[in-house]
Image 1 (cartoon, rainbow, N blue to C red):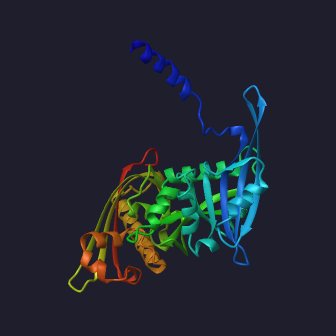
Image 2 (image 1 turned 180 degrees about the vertical axis):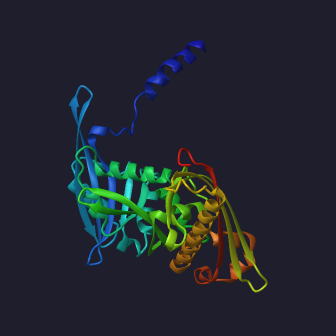
Image 3 (image 1 turned 30 degrees about the horizontal axis):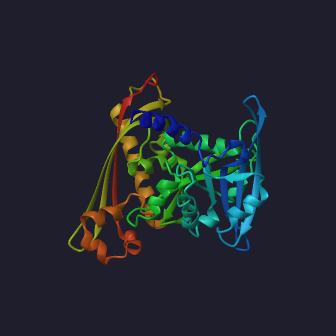
Length: 368
């Protein structure tokens, strides 16, 4: 019995060594960026950045990045067309960014997200972004030191930390599309020069359709705070005071506390009250040192200006029919009878928003 057990211990590890479904890196062409656009003929044009890896021996690899394009009436078959144009086995499982042109996004992005989400080899952490103009114009940019997909990824990660854009991936976007009680916002990119790309703000969605409305990056941070999606910090610059005595100030938000309350009266009128409290650090505040500084007044001026901007933002959400704050989710959870008898796409525009922002300066550094 002991001999049999010993033989099993020796033979089993030998049989288990190796990997039957291994995929060697040198046999694959990695895709690190993908774009989708709508053509003038109504077809779908796709572009990928294909990263070719060639072994030079001694653990040294040579990398070559190229742009490959394909065009089809639908998303089905695009992958096969791409594969026929690229040497080696195409692998999109590590596509860092998926860029969708704004014209195509207005028709809906469900089919493109589904294509990646249901594929067992897909990368569910891929960043999903909307581009101003054609997505290909961004993906086709050439960089000397690093492939453009990696550059875009770094730009997006930096903007996420600064609470300029939401953290959106294939996984979270798919969940948003399938949630009837809340709409999403996605990062909005634009090409500003022949070799530069920047975050322009956020694109507002209704379901899986881009509404054609965006919020600039100067206001997107406040929207994310209203959505309770504050990251590590958010920097803003404002002009305060009357026209006769305008005063500029820049500050960084260090902490956010939000309270959102949805109320329904006896006539089924919906009111959303949002109280937002911001702890901020003043970065710059040019001042007349002859006059004493009134911190209390600055807090009030900042609160008034940001409250005004918050009202403008909620009005924009209503006009775009974008329920980014998830009011529908609140109604479906706490007022199910009302939710079951209304059509939310039509009722949402009647919601009354009452945002209020209170600012508290907690740090001034060497400013004053």
